[in-house]
Length: 164
Image 1 (tube, rainbow, N blue to C red):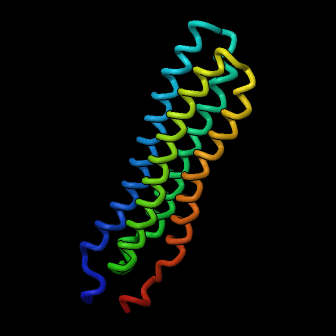
Image 2 (cartoon, one colour):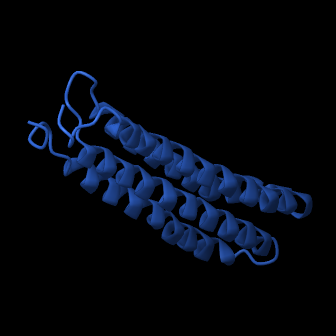
Image 3 (cartoon, helix red, strand yellow):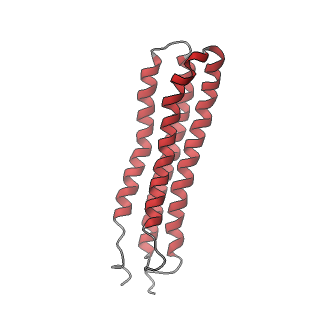
């Protein structure tokens, strides 16, 4: 092994796997909890609106968690113990995991705040629903951008050319 391919380079790759999965899931969980508070408040005043307000808020958060799952599976699939793994590859995979995880965390936070506020406003004015869906889409795009950056980073990792 050369100094460009130390045995501890795998740590950074798997740290990217962990950060993509954990941070995006924490963001989705926070958003679900925050928006769930608003939906529970909505149910006390207008129970007939619960299902209509539940679908856009919850589905956005599920997609954020799936982004982290996809990136973590792709990164873990490109790490093999039988092949050499460069330190550059480890850092690129860490950057890919962090970009997906941190944007998933930010998107989940934004979706939670927007979902809570808009669902509470939806009790009094039904015209807020369309603007709520649009703002939730804008908040989800933050996570999509992180997914795109992570996919681009994951494709730039050279194989054995660096270590060979």
